[in-house]
Length: 222
Image (cartoon, rainbow, N blue to C red):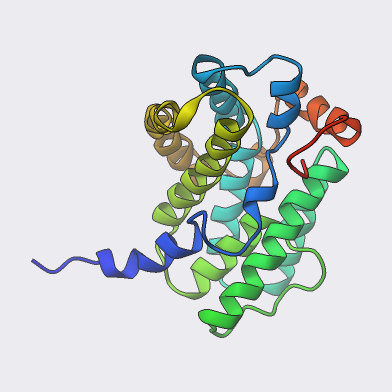
């Protein structure tokens, strides 16, 4: 039986922890959440990530990615969405997190998977914008790209949680598996949402990204 599965192989590489975007260096405020006791084990990590996906940057980034994917290389639309994505960063650390990963992601794509239409943006590039642009220019399906992006980001945060708290590899794997249905639901919602739907409601996590800047001991850059 012939399927289009091989067409999705680039996504497996682009959104794996091994892809050179520096995702291992960021925790999206999770390090502060562990420091203050909001996250201390598997049971508390799961709802923290659930809020990230449904009320925070996970959902917003998925919407932005989908719109960039559909922009078809329109430079003006790309600039507008990228400006919005960067402006939505609530702190300097989270701005660095998305812009550094986005710029590194696009540089790696240009080096290993070059194609036309990847030079429509200059300056800092938000991570979901970079992923949406590359996937769209390579003809990868938007639904699969959104889900893979959400899963990859969640996987990175679970890894950060495992390093920060006594959760363990098996516990982290359970958390990731438990969030699978939420990732699919958020991805489906993002495909149908317009840009007016972006925005988050994770105030404590956002404040944590400010507090993290002055945290005494840190493993992560956010």
